[in-house]
Image (cartoon, rainbow, N blue to C red; front, side):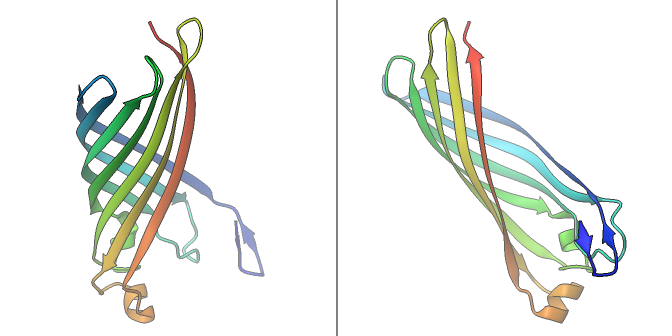
Length: 168
């Protein structure tokens, strides 16, 4: 909702994302496995049908990056893991428009932790907690950048998930 004292307007937020990647996993020994990969992805945060008075840019990050993940075997089937990813942002959507911030260079960093716990009858619980931060460096030329002297910004995201599955 946007409240400009005289009216209240409601907007729909479209938030979605996807990644396509390849990875290779290899055991180092019986306790440690390492996974390396490359990926291309997109994350969208868009306000659908916003009025012209609501001056907020839509972000549509597209990016290309690399990742590494290390898994430690706690028991025969239980694991904990840690990972990191770095990516370069190819496009930031409306953020790079001259109506908002103008040309920008951006990159991102991600960190993650995960676990896998075996349960009876071939069931398991798998979870992950991930942090992502995109840093933008603005070079000027955008209305907000020039009017307000903004030189950069950060966009952070924390996600978590827990899955119950069956192994067969």
